[in-house]
Amino acid sequence: MPSDLRSTPKPLVVEVGPLPRRGITALTVETPTSTRFARIDPTRPPARWKTPEFILYGIIFVVVVPIMVWVPVTLSQYDNPNYPLYAHRLSWGWIAGRKIDNSDSQYRSFRNNIPSLIFLSAAFLASGRLFEFFRPEARSDKLQRTSFLAKFSILVLFGLHGTSALKVLAIMGLNYLGGKLLAGTRIAPFATWVFNLSVLFLNEAYSGYHFSSLHPSLGFMDNISGFYPRWHVNFNITMLRLISFNMDRHWAHVKAGSEDTGQTLNEKQRTTVPLAAEDYSFQNYLAYSLYTPLYIAGPIMTFNDFLWQLRRPLEIKKSSVLNYAIRFLSCFLTMELILHFMYVVAIKDTAAWRGDSPFELSMIGFWNLIIVWLKLLIPWRFFRLWALMDGMDPPENMIRCMANNYSPLGFWRSWHRSYNLWIVRYIYIPLGGTKNALLSIVVVFTFVALWHDLSLGLLAWGWLVSIFITPELAARYFLPASKYGDKPWYRHVCALGGVVNILTMMTANLIGFAIGVDGVKYLLEQLLGSWQGLRFMLGACVCLFVAVQVMFEYREEEMRRGIFRRC
Image 1: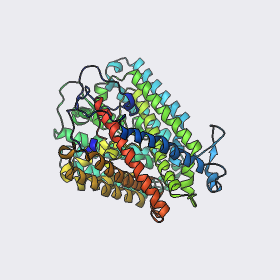
Image 2 (image 1 turned 30 degrees about the vertical axis):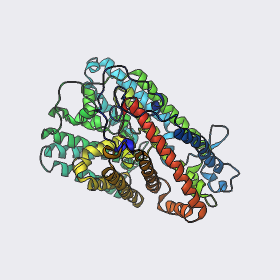
Image 3 (image 1 turned 60 degrees about the horizontal axis):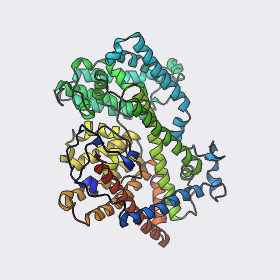
Image 4 (image 1 turned 180 degrees about the vertical axis):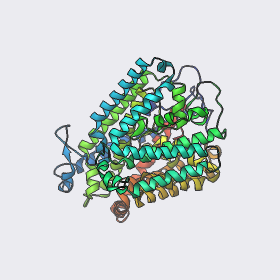
């Protein structure tokens, strides 16, 4: 789109002075870098919200969106013919006497453990305050906290994984030792990547290893499993931190990166400005890699960013933390309502869609994607809120709602954003970035797919995303906004491109994270194999065209208010 293809209007710098009220744009969460505030830009085109075109779009929204909600609710009623096929996957709920679809194992593990996580976060924060009480110097010098963070995190590690914590610490020790010996040499990056990717594959191949395989007498250690025995599943995130530490230390040795000016560093500078050699210590390595608020699920921070925030603490306003807590609670309650009134996960898992119309099938797929978005967003915001309360500001993982994306490139910048930033720093730029865009994208999404899960479905997802990004890259080249942006037809052509993008992104994500290859094949057969399905697809494309136009205008509204994003 217009907002994506257009060159950046002005340098994205923070200006001193009053900022405009955000209005409707306050619905989108603020971030330090993807949101840059400046004064109101008078060169932006006037708002279109009250034009006849957008009044028509508004009428369509008022009619269509409630129907999109009503259809899955209807499919989730007790008198629906397919209800007996998935009823066994439902649990007793707490809203309006309804049952709840708590059948998604990933979200269920988080939802059922919220009380324990709240207790752990309270214990962590209280222990941190006690540490600063008995060590007053830690209040002014936050680097003093690394000893507390390392010790507390190791205790939590043993509580989570039992004796398997020894496996985690052994891998971390080998990674640290190898990185220390090779830092500054040409083979350091290669060795770091080979070691960590090998560990990733071996963890999966040997199911996290067993002490009994070393010697039968050690079998008793396998029974001390902790609260979260499958440590190797969670280790994927830890692996990213191990690579970050080694690469940041290597680049510090070869003097790569920006120079420290002694001033307050922004988020990008905290990532690229190297630290002193003594800061890459084993204690700091442990404190970073096992940092309790972010250990389980992220968001992901680079080592440099983590330690710079300890060396030069940020001022995080209590009002900002409170607003973020309200956002988290709102998202959690929204998820509760969806799970109580839309049993689309259970319908998807039991293939209880026989006899459903193309529209009903599409809504099952759409709301499954919404649930995928929420089931990731809610834990990430919980853990980020925990870190904010500890004075640490990790990247926001989800910028926009899943349904507020029309660009594959923009979508991946705002979806799992901390992972995207990590990939850009440690894979995309080292591979050449835009100079080798296609190769970089294929390698990136192959890595992303295999990192998530060593499965054919996710590998197919990664390659599909790589293919589906190509048309947008071509559109940027052949229809640059700098040349055609002022043409009256340009916005509408871009909206058509946005429709194609949305359809392809939904297809790829349904394959990777929802109904799989077979489910998408059945869905496409129903949508494209009959006149009823084709009529629905035509109507759906019209609605998507309207939605993309609204997304364009929402982004224009942000820019009119001095807010510039890359997604």
